[in-house]
Each structure stands twice: as structure tokens, then as C-alpha cells.
Length: 153
Ligand code: IDP
Ligand code: MG
Picture 1 (cartoon, protein in one colour):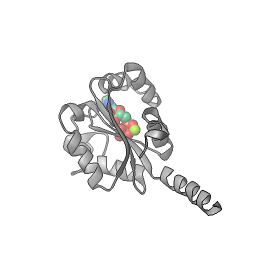
Picture 2: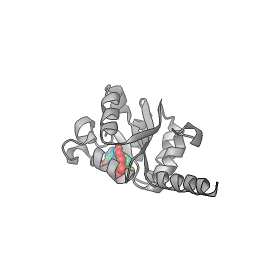
Picture 3: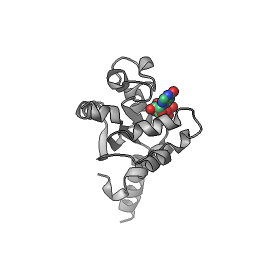
Picture 4: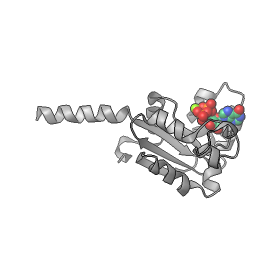
């Protein structure tokens, strides 16, 4: 019994350090690229733990991007992120945060490496197809913005 409890806690810890959070942004959903991008994510070895198609309200977008509230593009970003549907997902893989940032490429699609999701699907620096968390801590916060523990696979 003790062993089982220990293994359960160890497993949760390991999983928590290997998760990231993504959103497919309105440019990707409205262009019909949702399926293609999800396929790239799966083919790259990520496991989907939770996923939903939804749309951000003004208040939700302001809250999600609170960390960027002092940046000059904040207003534009919030307006853009509320302009259409998004797909939110929690993903799991070894070294998930860094691995996913590599898969999506640089913020500015003009600078994104060939073959990355942003190089192939992004329209502009704001409408850049996908979000990817920048740390384990933010991945957990952002995942909880959309999903309760009960909703995770
Ligand atoms: P990241 O998404 O690559 O982590 P961040 O610097 O965290 O990039 O910026 C968050 C989001 O804000 C970007 O994904 C993009 O949609 C938007 N953004 C970043 N820089 C600019 C800009 O200079 N103009 C307009 N939007 C921007
Ligand atoms: Mg960021």
C-alpha cells in the first residue's frame, strides 16, 4: 500500500514537470488549419491531456495576457485574440515547454525556422498561429485558466 501511494505521488510530480499549454489562435482556426496543426503536434510526440474549442471574451483575454499588459502591443493582442475561436490544449512530453517552443518557432514568423508551425501557418507577428508556454510554472497557470483537474486525460 505504501509503495502504491509513493508511486502515485512520484508519477504526478514527473507529469507536472513535462507539460505545456498551447492555444491555436484565431488566424489558425479561421483559416481551417486546426487539424493540420494538431497533427503536427501529435507527430512531434506530444500527448494531448485536455483540449477544447472556445472563444475568449475581452475580460478573459486581458486576464490571460496580464503579463504583457505593459507592452505596447497588449491592446492589439487582446483585440486579436478575441476576434475568433481558439483551441486550448494541455500537452505532455519530455521537456515539454522547450520542445514545444522549438516546434512552433520564433514569435515573428519571418524569423521562425523553416518547418516550424509558425513558419508554415502564421500570418504576422500578432497572428502567429499558436501560443506556447514559456516555463513550467506558466504552463501550469495557463492550463488551469481553461481546464480543471477533472478534465485532464
Ligand atoms: P511568444 O508567443 O513567442 O511567447 P511573446 O513575446 O510572449 O511571444 O508575446 C505574446 C504574443 O503577443 C505573441 O505570440 C504575439 O501574438 C503577440 N506579439 C508579440 N510581439 C508583438 C508585436 O510586436 N506586435 C504585435 N503582437 C505581438
Ligand atoms: Mg510568451
